[in-house]
Length: 481
Ligand code: GLN
Image 1 (tube, rainbow, N blue to C red):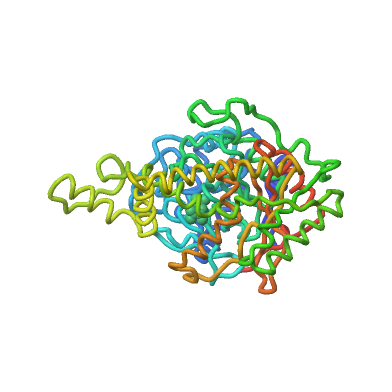
Image 2: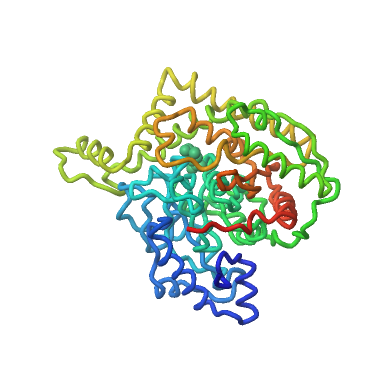
């Protein structure tokens, strides 16, 4: 094995600081990884050429010379940004997302655009208009979604970190399916400026890496107030989230194991067992574990379904063939132009979501659906707040089942809702959550568990996750493909 294979950011930083490698050597190595492996994994929509990557290089920052890939719904100036949709296939970003700008300022090398479910809608990356990404652990299986490209690239060792986006679990889900760390921060802590909107009140940029330490490092770079995003948290100042990662569980830590999630009859038994084992590891390391319930979580997937579709219908109305994106050629008049452009430009999943969104917002139905969903969202928030009076962090599974085969859940709404069940309530509550690898099924597919905390408890989540990774080595098992 090459010394740099599956290297973490921490390893690479050390290599650069001790002059073992130059940033040029690092970049060449990872570009070569894509050249060799990505025809199989298909994680990237585009890998940029070496020269243009280096043109954007600002030496000297926290991420000096560390390559990463960006989900293709986050703007990188003068690069195409497609959202894996025909609608935006030939659209170029005219500015950097704030997160991208901060990464560049700190010396990161942004090497490409990662595949996703079209407009981040899905749990398998199968709805991409371009191609399907494969799970590095089993090429017959999906990588999860919607940030499947970003996460598969890290899991396959083609890059040490990536950005994805979360509206209802889209970083944690593929991270659990592919055996890497996936993190969704507190709503408002990372600027959404330059993230193409799906459901704005839920959308957050998230991070994937091999280790919790690396995630904390990338978060230190991208988090913090941004005047360009009105929902950005004013009180959040920049800090180094790696500083207190001692590898120890904070003294007196109380963990709540979410029993209604664990007891969900549809949860795969191997995922349940591995989540319970992870809890035991933390208990043995000194944490006190108590049972808690988040009763309203059982309505999370239904609530997420309504709110996300409603906001999607409104956000995606801007793609009309006039102002942005794909324009149909064969139209007689303006109405025809709208209809043809949207019919030809969007895939089926996106169209279904917009139709449902318009339905749940329409006069006569909004009270029954949208307004009720917002009330339930309030109850979910209260349930989490009540739980955090009893404990510091919560644990539950990240996934309903291990990575599934392509096509297995086509048109199976119940299964797709189940994929969201364990994840989307954190988005609805606006709280941070991190998925950490905790073992493998008998079929050798990775499994992850989640650590969830109250608003702005990122530092604590990283401490608990880092302590877990100091004791276990699940994150150091790598796929062969
Ligand atoms: N699986 C969810 C969905 O299809 C999550 C999407 C997301 O977080 N972007 O909506």
